[in-house]
Length: 210
Image 1 (cartoon, helix red, strand yellow):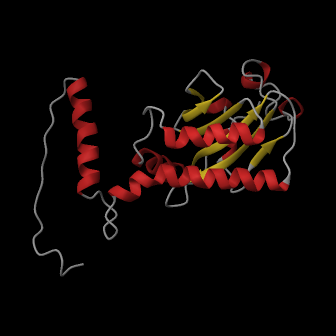
Image 2 (tube, rainbow, N blue to C red):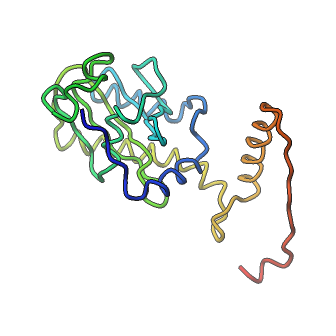
């Protein structure tokens, strides 16, 4: 088995992923409908929106699997984010990178995999929209283009909240973004019994600077 390499911009990629604030959040219908559509379109048992974290791949949307994450070392998506195009494995048992992978030798018995990378606003590859089958198969050119279209829709959904909470000029959180982030941080402090402090300042007459 071949473990996936790290992208050359791994530090920036992880920062972009964490800035979305979606890791370990509940499933959302806006992404679940895309994985359900992918499952139906390609007639596969499994479709995922997978985000590749530091040492795991975590599934923001998951159709056909009972788990929400697996180790990055054995992930197919870890390989997929290294390129720009759809990453396709027609038969994992015949590919030396995956033939003895635990996900191939055991559940969910992956044979076919196709993953289209999901990009952040800075171009970093955050994960994939991927489809998985338990039997070998191939994709036509039209199939690959359709998977890329679905992945682009998933990208837009992942970026939508960030785009709505960032100031266009400064690229830092606007009022909506600040309230969202502050609530998450304060809730975390409350759960863990840690104190929290807030420091703020006003910048007057900012409009002329704009």
